[in-house]
Image (cartoon, rainbow, N blue to C red; front, top):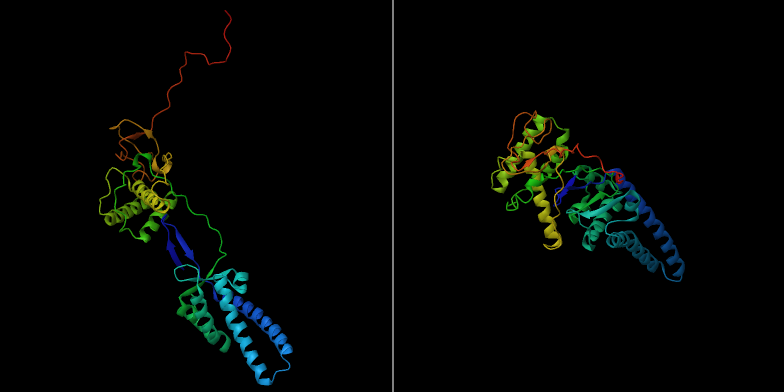
Length: 321
């Protein structure tokens, strides 16, 4: 499986096609090409019946090269890697980096395909696909292409909880250029699944990821921020930078952050200096939920204001004079 990681730390999976589906697609393509070859050749022979045998043989060879070699090359070039057989089987030819193929890729695949598919009845192609780690035949190896599955099961992506509001913009000055894509992906996967982890395991995993991330950025992780919230805030900062880079500095306007979910112990703003006690049983505080943690000196849960009991409820009617 080949993975490309986007700015949101999401892995785009390119799933190589299996040998049975590729063989079925090749058989469908060959069947269509042979039918077209027989129809065109029969018409040409009837139209050139007055020519000698040598001329008819030359025309038959030309039709063979044009339809069985040039036809697949033209179809893959114009359809960007989707021949009739691949379209029926949900396959597509792409470059090694996931981009669409061009004429030179289709030309190399088609010319080598004459040897490993037509001349050897597909034996060489089957052996090369079984030996290759991604199921590529010799044409794919020399052309730098890969046959992937386009129709794959739709999977639900996990929800990444936003960081607490009091961390908005705190890590805007971090240098994130040295953080590899693999670490971003690991952080995202942890944040989407931390509610399903054991508190002790989740806390130790968050500390390990936070230490690795701090080492890559060159700035130590703040002691007053729990590891999970630190990871979420830095990940949000990276996504904001990618959005500004993609849409321009003026197009992406930062929206006010939503209230933090229970995983982060969301609350409302309070005067500075008020200690914050994380609720028990959530991965935002220490494992077990016991003890005080100065993770949010400016955040505290405030009770709702009491309802005065000495005033009757408003009914909309005035009492009689």
